[in-house]
Image 1 (cartoon, rainbow, N blue to C red):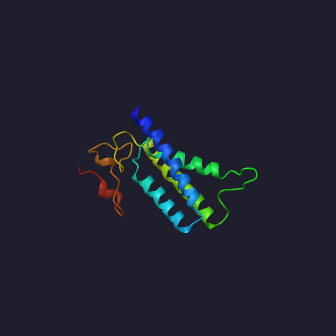
Image 2 (spheres, one colour):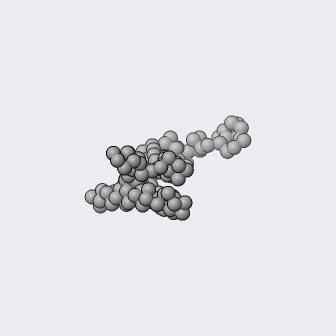
Image 3 (cartoon, helix red, strand yellow):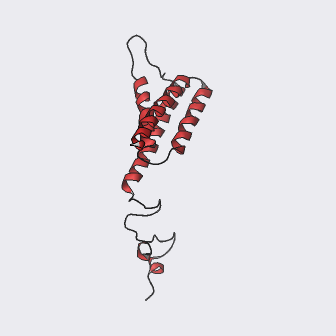
Length: 142
């Protein structure tokens, strides 16, 4: 229950971060500050289902909403360098979170970052060969 509440809070924080970045992105220092805040937050959040994905969802939803044109007012994100950099930042957020989610889903529980699903502790036959090693070098002694 606490993680669900944290996920909802992080989605709101992601939406607030994206709103701030969208509002200050026309200024060069605003875009730099917003990109730094976005990337630092994405890096600092733990890699779990309740942290990065809800935050990124809030971030990307706000970006998607502001990219829509409203009648009589036009677009909030201009077609200039700052606007394209903002879209690129949104793409970076999506790529980081998708890569995190796929590694969390595909990695078995308790496995380290370098473990493969078939590796067993102490099993030397599943070890990766060192770079430049021949196949005969890895054969177990007879």
